Image 1 (cartoon, rainbow, N blue to C red):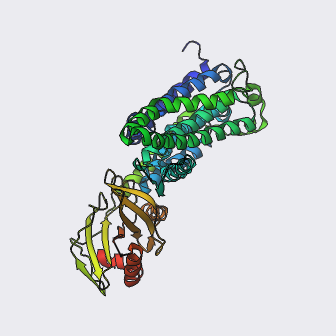
Image 2 (cartoon, rainbow, N blue to C red; image 1 turned 135 degrees about the vertical axis):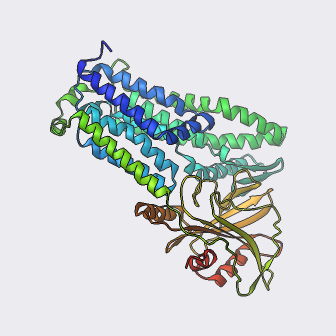
Image 3 (cartoon, rainbow, N blue to C red; image 1 turned 60 degrees about the vertical axis):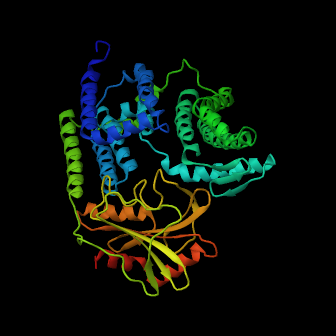
Length: 505
């Protein structure tokens, strides 16, 4: 460290030790993120984000090293916010929020130990750390729908006979599904990361940066629609299996390279930053009056580290106490009698059983009324919400991962439930209504459930959470929607009905 100024040696050592401690303390979150970076093709690009952050900081080092790092007391507020974000994510069982909090602790401690002036000079590398968080899965359903609509438009334009049903497109060559892997989310997320990076490194004006980022969003989405259409078009001549194999090869290796090349070719002529120009205007940072005022709120490094430890330990302790909460549940529960309906054998046209990992009790049964309407009722109750047992977690509920069922579109709006239309084997249709219940809150919204769960855990209040899924298959001469409407009218408000099943009131 001979070339490192004396004022920086202690600061960098303290920062490195703090980051190492934070990553070790929240190793579960970092290991979970690394697993996604390494094993999920959607997030493989994040493995490049880490060295890119180091490169961005190194590019700024000749200018930044002329500043004096100075611990700043208000950095504790930023750290407290990051810890609180992690706590809320833990309470909600929401890995995205939890992991965002874990990552946010790194720039927050950078602000605390280096001070506002140095942090401003290194603002972009610190901000780019946001791309360490595996985000974007939430975009898959809308991207599937957008891709399917673009594809059917191109299919119609090229005079291929076809019918669209949600994310399924039926053609003479076979039935095609715009599956999650075909949504284009993996390339969209990577292109956004690239767009932000190129926007900072190659452009000076915000107008051009925003325009380039918009290009990085629009082009991959449009290109993915063309790719999906190309697969269907080729299948009409070489068969679906051969076209699918070609598509996977192109999609994995060629497609992304072509999209990057196209976007960079379009943006290249508008680059307005000289490669020899410093990445940060250090004189503007050095002379900023606001930073002068902020730097006066200094704090001794040992005290800053001690208070940071208190915040982190306090947040982790709060989360651990909430994790220990367990609501009291009966040893056994039963599906109740429903007036005008009788229990019949559960014999679905295609195997279907919702997923409720971590639930203390699960029930699944079929009801039939005198008119011949049939509905399937699934009920699960959880003693607590946490890692591996979130009622609204990914893969939970009506659509079980790696099953024969696929989501096609939203279903009919009934009783404030989450409504899904599912398809199995291309022909078996099922509508599913989902409600969640905790305390007095009944909702089909996963967000509403998360908020209620967070409130309970913030107050260290043990309450059970229940999931109710009322579902019906479409059968010849029988409307699934009519069956669901008839059953929900009979049971009334689903909240008290769920309480009866769980014997909570």
